[in-house]
Length: 138
Image (cartoon, rainbow, N blue to C red; front, side, top):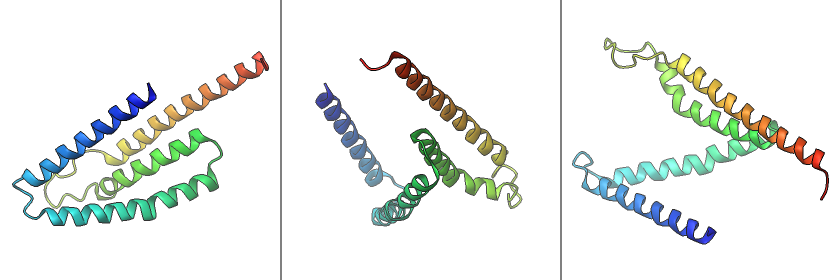
């Protein structure tokens, strides 16, 4: 069963990559696909060379449990995606439709929602541990 799941996941991933490559090469707005490749390689280098090591070091240093580490990774990703909009809120250059939403509020609500999910996950882990201790060794 696990082999079938792995094979299916790999095939789905390959199909998605093929579709993305087709879209890249067939898009009329992309005049030089090599520029996209350079951008993608730069993103990969930044992600694997800087972002992942920093997140792993911060998680190993500051987070004790796996739930907190997972939430810190989610919070870091949300910050990386949302911070540009939060910092540019109100900077519309005369176009009020450019950044019309309350980005700081939405960012904080998203962090709070993910923290609540993490707390529920931590509570579930604690309940499971407590039940195992009560059951004792079998």
